[in-house]
Amino acid sequence: MNSLESTPGTRSTENKENVIKKKRGLRMIDQMAISLAFTLVTGFSAGKIAESRQTEAKGRDRIASKSKIPKPKSYDERERLLKNRRFETETKHIETRDGDIDHETLRTILKETYPIGWVEDEIRIVESSPKRKPMPAKYGMGGVALASCYRDIDGKSEIVFHVDSRDESKEYVIGTIGHELAHANDWISDDHLTATEGEELRNRIKSRLRSPDRFLSSYVEEINNANEEEELETKAIEYWAEICEQYFDDATKLSVEDFNIVDGHIKKTDRLFGWLGAKERRYRLAGIKIEPPQNYR
Image (tube, rainbow, N blue to C red):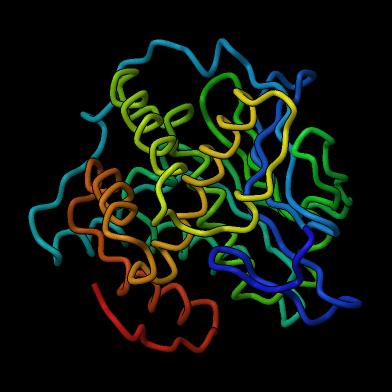
């Protein structure tokens, strides 16, 4: 990254020499594990890199499994469902610079503060690793990965926070979870979308990349690949994750079009989801002070 100035969708850190930009959601392929992966980046220069993706996974013809999603008719019913439903996603503690997020707290955050269908139907485990993961080379940026989301061939995803999470705040790590969940719920990975619905979402996001009022993420803007088609696809994947992360954090900072894309997608499985109330509970559970947004939408 050439500029050290923060732009919307990117956060800088104070604990490293000079200013080291943090990046979101790298997608790559682990051919040995036959899995798709999406990696959150700590960028020492700029950005993330997309390795070639599995064509089979990207283009698979799937049938949406909407019938599996419970649809509460009131907010009270939704709250009871969130607290009492069976929840099989496994969690491990995550280390941050201002204390661990223990596995029970993380489990409650995942279970109760994200949209119905976004976690339990898509994520097998959220855990940490003591190892540092270098960035691949095809995003045209350097750095190491902070977190990765691997999609197994059976359709479930695994989110892994690498050792560099120890240098980040709880708030930053919590924000990262939203970004990684978005990768597990995009047009490639979301099993609640039909192939047609997935392609429609993909095309809408690609169209947003060319819009003058697009969400300005320096991470997305600086992805650079000699293969223009691959660069566009990679930017679309990351743009989706960036606007989802922003939606979970403060949806008032999204354009109307980006808000409608994310909100509409979420409402397919959780029509009563409210981003602000969810964020407030998420932050309370993690012990983070929350400032109310200036312009609540």
